[in-house]
Image (cartoon, rainbow, N blue to C red; front, side, top):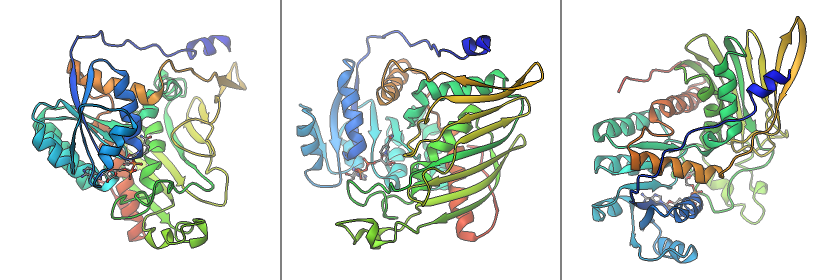
Length: 383
Ligand SMILES: NC(=O)c1ccc[n+]([C@@H]2O[C@H](COP(=O)([O-])OP(=O)(O)OC[C@H]3O[C@@H](n4cnc5c(N)ncnc54)[C@H](O)[C@@H]3O)[C@@H](O)[C@H]2O)c1
């Protein structure tokens, strides 16, 4: 057993050497997640944040003041920023989901590298347009999945790729919050006009990435999806803001059964609110062994405790606990550093669109199947 533990003890990756390059960055959308972007960019001596944009008058200016960002120019939209900053190297797109596609496409069409927040966008059609713009531009597009930088997530991939589980044939994934509709900063996550989708895309994208990244992102074939909005539509859910119930126009729970290429079936569920503590652990079943990844009560893409491999040793059924991995950099910082490294060194995107378009296709398929009330086929065109 200790031999197995030794094999899964640490994740060591080479980091690119400094090139001495310096890049100019803009941030589009100065809401909550932009705070993480600015915090990280400010730590890097080779990055200068030169421009901020937000649709809400005065918001970008206040953001600069709150985060002590000096010598920046302010704009009232992502497009205005791109039009007026010809020397900019990259943008962080931190807008609500409905503005991901227009802002990313505009930036790429103008030759700007893009770090696009998750989820990639709202529909598969939008994802296709983004990838077309990326391919045409030859610029880097990376999607903001910071859990990818977590050594525990890397360990899941390492275990699956090691062959320890054998052939993977079934995956159960998802996570849940008992009560956790994200409204602390207003209604941008619950209004279809801004968010487009609810829990399904907001945190479902993490659950999908956790397992699909590990198994190599096989393409989806069919999906049978279900979504509901039971809690989001209740005025009593929002003490002090009963009016939010009228705004709520997305899902707060989703479940789906997905067939993937390579004979893998994927059982998925996700929740912002439900009468349960968790929608269950993530399970990856292979013909040699199975992996259990404990879910957290407040799912945001992290793991809830040490993972366990269920396997046989000398004909006996045994369980091996995988120690929790430490990280030497926080995940947000690692995500933004890896994007900056890619731009400076012309490296491949850390979280490439070729993978995340599959994540988006599944999310889109679940939403469309739920609406149609039946299983549907998923087709992702070659771009
Ligand atoms: N990676 C993570 O852990 C994480 C965490 C939270 C949110 N997010 C993602 O980040 C995105 C933003 O979330 P948030 O909580 O910051 O939302 P938010 O509503 O607080 O902020 C979004 C801001 O973008 C601005 N905006 C929208 N369209 C714009 C445009 N075209 N040009 C300029 N500004 C524009 C809005 O006015 C708003 O101020 C969402 O897609 C969300 O899923 C990621």
